[in-house]
Image 1: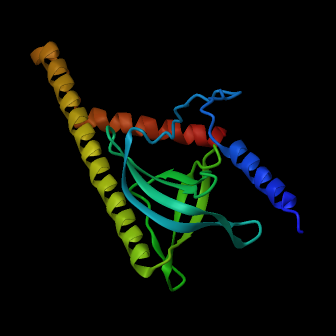
Image 2 (image 1 turned 180 degrees about the vertical axis):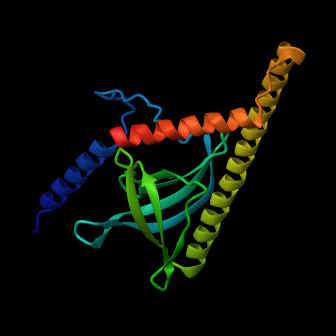
Length: 220
């Protein structure tokens, strides 16, 4: 007669294993308690006006070749107060900065060597912690994304041109106004007795200055 003991022992082993997997309700406190830490990206006061996936390259002058800087997301970030716009790109996995520079009025972007998915531009970049003149090339997955990037780049550069021209015009107007006020004040203080240089005196002074310049030139 066959014995059923092995089967009985097998059932006991299964029951024991099942009991080990049961939730006892006990709570085990973690050995190390990790606290949430706020990480600053430096972009808190900026607004992203464009974000696109791309691959970035920089031209190595010494090796006379293009070298990859990284693949990730390129952004145009507009500062909420100053309204200045900078281009920032980080690698997708490490978040290391590949490019970081302002987009200014003198910049321009153009298609790279007939490749409709790539474009190039010059910039004074700060990605490595110091200002460097770089020639960048960026490649997108589609022609549409490249066109969008180029249009936004040009739009930002032109907006900076308008802003800088307005600032220069305002500054020039303020300076002229200040000079006009100072000149009028000087005239009022001098009154009618203010000396007026004659044409002969002006010519004489000019000749003296010219003679002095010649003497300095000959002595040197």
